[in-house]
Image (cartoon, rainbow, N blue to C red):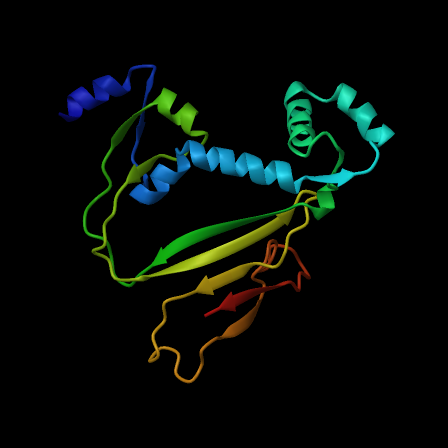
Length: 204
């Protein structure tokens, strides 16, 4: 079987990888949902433009040089608002928050990583170099720790937040909520940038 797998991997349209990222069925379904795409487009369109009384000459001039996709979004927002003029929100006022969840547990996972064949077309369509596999394995007993990153379109980053949820009363006696400031828990912290006194936050 391994020999056949090697032969298939030599095909120009197939890649061979040993590491895949586990993704739940719910998340895999949501990421390929047309509803999710429409919802994201609606949020971007409604949150990046402000209705104004008169069209700004500077914006009108910039739209002449804008690509077709930018012009299309602008026209769609104007039409959705009944034809009123709109002004784009400045980059420093646009924020994006991304939550990355890590699964923390004590012990080790049984089993070894297996070589996996994946088509190059599927990687291109997914929009990421990472390879995912759907698995709803609940055998491990641990907790989920959420890392929250917030950036502005101008390049500024908010302090990092780590949220630990699901703790029992025995683990947190007499404390319904705990907040800790952690020096160095920031981009460029931990000695990467000399003199960086930035702090991150841990919530439990």
